Image (tube, rainbow, N blue to C red; front, side, top):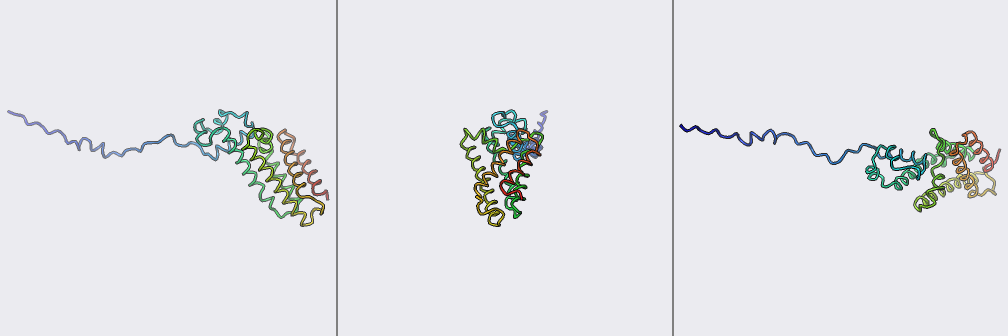
Length: 223
């Protein structure tokens, strides 16, 4: 008696479960676990505290939470990250100062407010850090033409903003006819620079405010 062979199960039945099962999409690389904007702010804080030379890639990696390949991919090398950080600082400072420079308030009041905002920036945090532009001008700008250009641009921009303040004040009769807005602007900028350096040296804010008061009296008059 010949036994009938059983038909093998259909291939479709065997593989149906596999075919019908959803296929998980393949992941491409690791997901970005950081916010570039936040990371740049962390890098800026580190550069402001330590300067360019004393800030290592390991320091930047620890501060931003990014490994070296991620840092390079997001910002370029250390120099490029420094430049991007410096640009962020300038943008922030410009935003903080723009409204008061454009204010219609009397000159003396406007100058006092400008210097108060500057001191807020220079003395913020546990360790006063001064002005990033002034600190950078004394170091990286010497050898790096790109950074030097940015520093010069920042200095000229500040001079022009102060010159506009003094010119408008002169037109309003707040300054004598003999007043030279350009010269007064340079004195005003020089005051910014000196309080920035002294703030970095941890001169108490009260003393810095006295310097500002004396400078304003010289530029505008002590009336």
